[in-house]
Image (tube, rainbow, N blue to C red; front, side, top):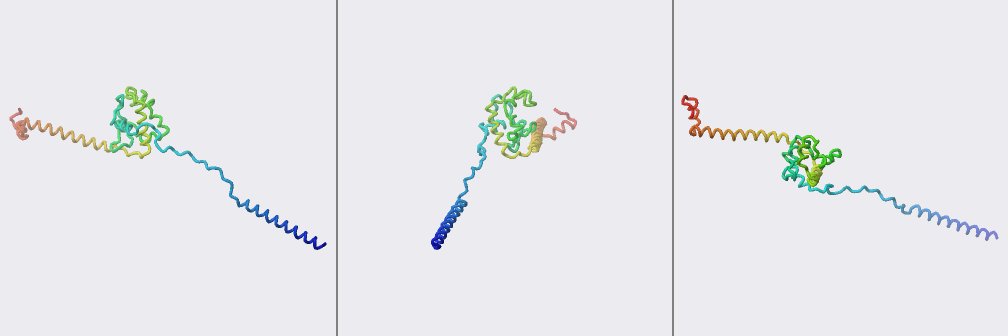
Length: 205
């Protein structure tokens, strides 16, 4: 009887131990299972790859430089403004417009509503009579959008000064040649004779 009772105790203990080992194995496997999938990361929308404006930047540049006339006969923007377009740049009466498109406080000024109103100093009297069209402004905006992505070129004021000086010298030389030729012809093609006649007591012709 004692043996049978001991046998039952041993078998019961073995069963209990096996059950505990099995439970521990299940818990371990659960602990090492793959973690639950995390929430998808929030991705910011990609910026548009191309230009925002639908106008033609090349036509806008031609309008700015005066290589293409405005439909209503207005003067080119380059006569008063610059926009980093080349060595001669443009006028200095108005501000540099290279970064105007990128400036949120000034972007709205690139509109026909602003440019064509008569109350604007300098431009108002001109473009209120010779309006820039919506299509032309669209092309100009595309041009300014493109320019705003580059660097601002240095002022070309020194270049204009040099060109002005050289042009003045050239004009003086041309007039000097013209008048000296007339003077020589009048004196029988001899400047010495002309001086003699005028100042040597013989009088001029």
